[in-house]
Image 1 (cartoon, helix red, strand yellow):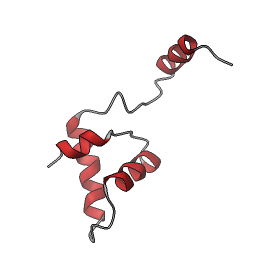
Image 2 (tube, rainbow, N blue to C red):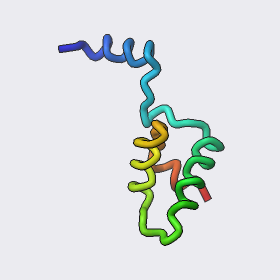
Image 3 (spheres, rainbow, N blue to C red):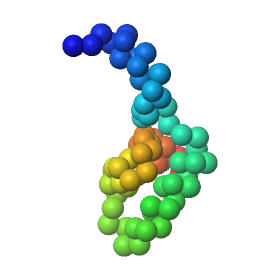
Image 4 (cartoon, helix red, strand yellow):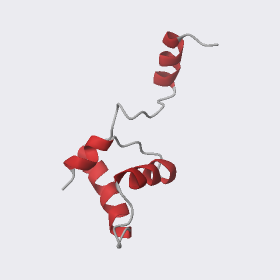
Length: 70
């Protein structure tokens, strides 16, 4: 059992990535563009690409950022 305050302190100390602190838009655009380019048949939607980026790159990108990218 861990108190929420202690958990926040540990997350800040170890710089645990969260969706609430997204990467800058140019970096997110680059990463999303790379994975969208691999998706030639357009069979993967934003959720699938988002999960792929999180698993392979370790970058958590919120859904609203996908809609900001042209």
